[in-house]
Image (tube, rainbow over the protein chains, first blue to last red):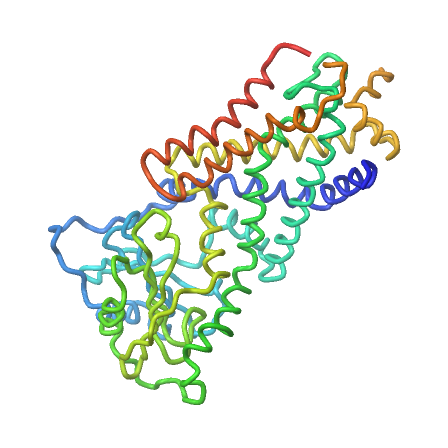
Length: 381
Length: 60
């Protein structure tokens, strides 16, 4: 492979994805701090203080509370986040079990009394707009997969950029930034410096972003694969008409795991369970296993548990790639570093755009520029 | 600006070191808390320090 070919790969993969990557970097910036911003922008609710040993209400009671707060809706999921939202139960509801994810409504209940703490209206607000632009540009699955493709181009652009770094730096010391010669040379040097220093971070965030865009597909694979195999005996049975107690399902599931925390319960007929089972999902209790999930499936009619199986590797990969994309796993300092690296990446994108727009030249000239470490620029004022 | 052609090793030793530090930083906070978080801030943050150093140098 010669320099010209790598130059053309770098140029075109970069050009195609740059504007979308800029959008992703800019919308991603507030999302890094979404937790802090939620408290500022949207008055975060707090559960009232009660004696520490106040027991949690039965999930059946909590479910009834949620259903009476939104008559006509069904419950799809209940989930918990004791670290950031102690004593709060989140209930995700919708008009029907198979309604679009965007049509979900979230109710927050006090886990001990069942009191409704928060009942948000339809989704909206600054953070929601940032989130939707970042994830699928309001274009659903096609938008999500398109952004995933842009992320792949970004990865190719990074790799081809590293290849071009070699001839460019043949006679230059690491970190050279030539300010005196021309504006173009200064930004060419900075583009190379910023790009090569943040290389690993940009590759990891880019690749994990691509993996995240595959999440609907990963969930689908799990449904068709492991979940279908585990519930094969139920394939010909009609869905249960009478739902058994969800609290009992949780108690049964609790007996099948050790040293884990409840994370989410999926109702039968939702994306995360079968037509016949409550899917009770537990998190581990170490920093690493807290990111992974262990489902226990409970027959919604009989209350019997299926033998738990570990999630397949492709689901685990998705779960582990999420923190590496969000940067939310090392406290506030890591978030700040994440944001600064994000801004550096914006500088790489904009300088790249500037290098392409400024003083258009033939490919041959540009290849000479790479091969000579930018020295051909000296000949011009 | 050096006159001689550099070897691949000379060109890539600094980027490789920073890549290694980045990998340590990305993984450290993932596998533990406390000291491992601090290690993650220092290693991943070193890339920002390197950028600040070379960008602000009054030379060239």
